[in-house]
Length: 249
Length: 168
Image (spheres, rainbow over the protein chains, first blue to last red):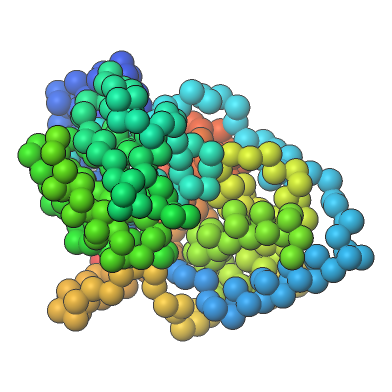
């Protein structure tokens, strides 16, 4: 805590540093006992919060009342009411510095199963909400597979199963608990399936989970970790995983 | 249902739990948290035309935080004492096994109490970072302070939390 580099160490642990800044921070932590202790403390605290504290869920009554409120707003008379841009107000005073604050880099310690599960679920929902579900759109593994080369340290399998209804749609790069992962995207009917592939860092993988209606299945194969996530039916996702696991490389 | 409403629901409603969680931790009261979230959703919907894409979660949480500040300013003006803790809403985390639940329950409650007692500016960065997984940039946008301030508050929040947690 007394180390003057403490904030940089923290930024590194929070996955905010990239490239040279990250390797510098990493070298510093190796040589600084204060920062090593701070790193261990931060990891322990973060894990305890994620595992043990209450993340409160909106009560059903609140959901219902919110819908009713919106009904009131969408009534024809109210529909033309537009106060001036609220975002400007919400953001006023927000710093414009350090817009380049980067994205995550590998953490020192293997992430906990809880962190992994949360990270995958968040990545998938974020990708669906935003426009970045697919960075390379192609149904040909001759296009998708080489696209990953040089962008991420793993070469993911990109099998295609059109006959079974799992159609290769493209790929993107994402982060799983701070580690760069290849994400192969499939379409299954109206659902998207994300296949996350990242280097095995010695983490214990979480059990299969369902969060907010998204199913996730984890497995290891060779020196890679895998996770398939989708809001399709769990049985369908299991079928997909079986196909991927039995596909020839 | 009109298109704007459908768009808003598709984008904003998946973050209703996040909105409630933030309001709940900031206000420390289930009843206040519900009022804050309702007000925030209404304001977000009215301002939705001004939202120009990107990630809607920080945008929504910034509105939640503003509504909380307005609500607490009102409370102070009227001289109301804060409401006592009411019964907790159900937790979002997966159901642990009974044994694990028993072992974790007391420690989890302790940690909850310690976080709830942190000063506002430290509690909010901690919740946004550790529970909502926001980046520094997003936390800066939500709380309206520079990234450097986010970093020092986060460091202070963690130090305070560790100190109090070790002591209890």
